[in-house]
Image (cartoon, rainbow, N blue to C red; front, side, top):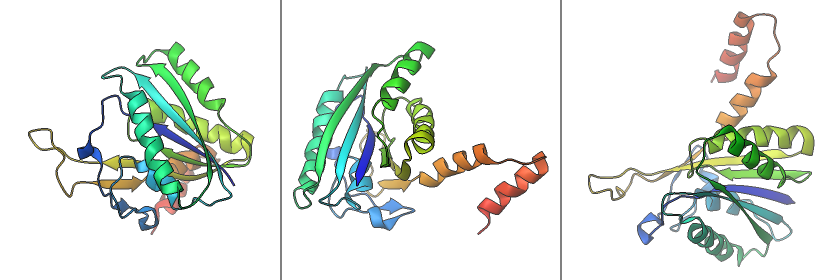
Length: 210
């Protein structure tokens, strides 16, 4: 199976303290029982098979400590470590952009992301790091992938930690969230076709009904 994993990279250098055991909120099947740096590892490893072909799109933002290359290497080493026992084919494709929130830069990043899409693939993503605007760019990329490339959205994840007054990670605060339902909610809203706002609200209420 063809899989595409989008990973947004942190601007600051990562340290050994960033490597943690993360419980997973919303999908315990993604949990890895050893320390990891990236939620992306949890997102992809649980479904990885020897016959899979994986393209990892490493989204690096230039700014801060300019640690994108170092963090990309950390992720590559981490995923390769887990893949040793699996044997999937993995390629790594970096995308670099300045920390620039202008419309012109958005267009360039959006085009670069679209260029990495392939037909009939499963999409995975870790949107933990990078500028807050990146998820707003990635979501329409995923919708484009579903509509025009026959892709399916498997997992979108986000890792959370809390810090103490000394900016050290608080033990036990680690959590990976499976936020795929958030993406699906956005897609569902775009697909609603109804004659009134009242009917649209009822459709959303039906979606949220336990």
